[in-house]
Length: 541
Image (cartoon, rainbow, N blue to C red; front, side, top):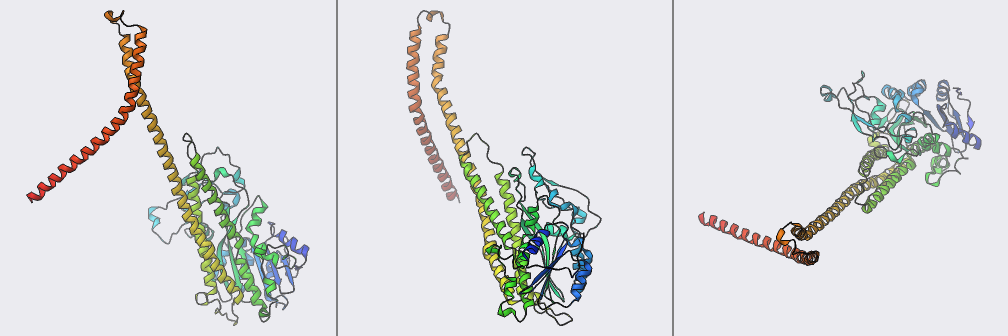
């Protein structure tokens, strides 16, 4: 892999350079990029070497380029670069070690399975808080990918299994195992020269899935852990977990969509192609009068905010939940017209269960985002505006960025979290409706069976006298053989059949009346004797 030095920057406002830069971010060979920009100028460099970054950090910044953004894809592949940045901005040894840690090798998207494994720790280790959990103890659900979507429809249904795999030799909790098990895991670190946000960002993959395996599939979402640093010298650093290998480049593009959107809008040639709903004003804000006194603070703060605010991904997640709920609702309502001889749709309840689990999980994730927003704008909680380093500089977030964090917190609370509660309530309502519909259909089927059994009983009663008549005429009695003729038989048949039908019609109603009357009499007699016994007991007392 060829690496560039710090001096090999290109004009990012050039349309060709901007387009090429966006394409390079989808290449596996791209390890990092550095962008420096101001109100009137921007430049970019890719695959900057460790020596080049070190030289940039030691070089005095040009007033025309007050803001710097260092983005690193897969920091575990560039540990020397992480160490250089960590030592310069005084990252804690623990934070540097976490950023350099390797993600699990078996967590690539192409290897996700449709089986959920759970394991129970041994009784001797279950209550030991120092042992913790490792990857072998608890494997979280594997999400299906494009390669797994070709599974045949006739394949056996996935099952939940508990594995008893042995605990690994390392009893410490691995970072990526932790963030995979707890997708709402987030952190806010305050250092002498930086403020760091670490969190899982959820991304909706565009790859089409096989609907036949939707029972246990966790959807098309994939998490990606990222760290965002706002430093005291107006530098923003972003580290992104390696997502693994994708067979479809659109999936990788979706995973990096927000980063690429922010990058594109740092170029004057990229603003015209931007969706108005995701329009960002990092460089435009530097021209405002309020930003003239401290353009570095304004630019780095807004860049820090827009890298955090991946609103299109949040909206797509909510839209996906809406679509799946509507689909399940239509399936439940169509089940009302199901014929009695057809079995009910057994996929509805498992699908609702999986959807409910996803909604609750994402609700926890968005509560974590809201907490991070509140922590960032609250100086008492974060000391973000009072963290002073040895050089006397301050890690300051601008007022405009603070206001944006506050608005984002309000949007999450009013639009997203309330919507998640509605999803949960609607899911429970759909489950209740589904069972009520099936109970009603079962009652109707039972009523039909009762009517059929009653009809058969009446027919048997109707033809019972005919059977007796036929048996009588077929009896070999010597004295009667010359007396009865076929004409006598058919006359008797017609008379008895008519009388049986009339008796069946009238006596069925009479029998019902007599039965009800006897029930009333029995109840009155029971009540009478009960009252007598109670009176005798009271007199005896």
